[in-house]
Length: 235
Image (cartoon, rainbow, N blue to C red; front, side, top):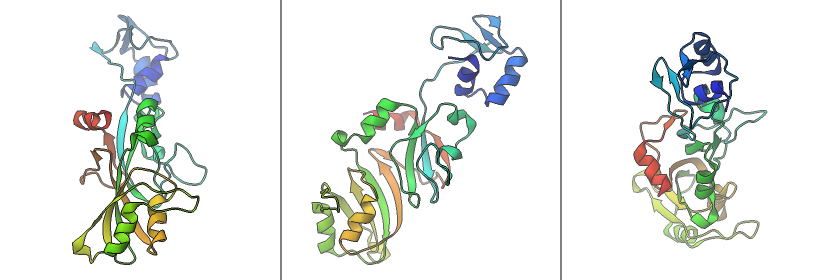
């Protein structure tokens, strides 16, 4: 790995800032001052320090974001801003990608990482990772239609949804619900409610597996997962 990439990935600064830091002679590789960012280093074996402090290599990052409406769940897009565009340079340098997707007009929890194995495990149909959504509906949800959603329905391409869990939020005149599904088909939640003659007016993912979207994390904000949250997604 190039030294400048290693430094940027380790949170030392942006590529531009790293260049200035190297030029100032603050970086040592195996006790020798190095100013050339193109130098190839072994991020595991080499001893890399900044002003005497050892820089620990972190191969993977795990970032939780509260995605706003109008943002695409992708790494790049020619027309719309993406979730990666919202990140600071530090995380962009890791070349993170969103784990799964949320529709452009859907808000809420999305995880970004450069850990392909973890992403596969969270997205694999065999793992049955639950996704919980808060939904605001055009019409109240009746007990009969609630049962239809929970028992599984047949969508347009002959895909039959697995059993879902639906919780009616009583204080909102039955027009707001939580729905938990284990698949992630295109527009699945909206299509499920359309099937029973209703319309989704607002949709927000609040939970993925055991990982819960914190109330303090505002729309557009993001942060790395805590150690406790990491245990939740790894177990």
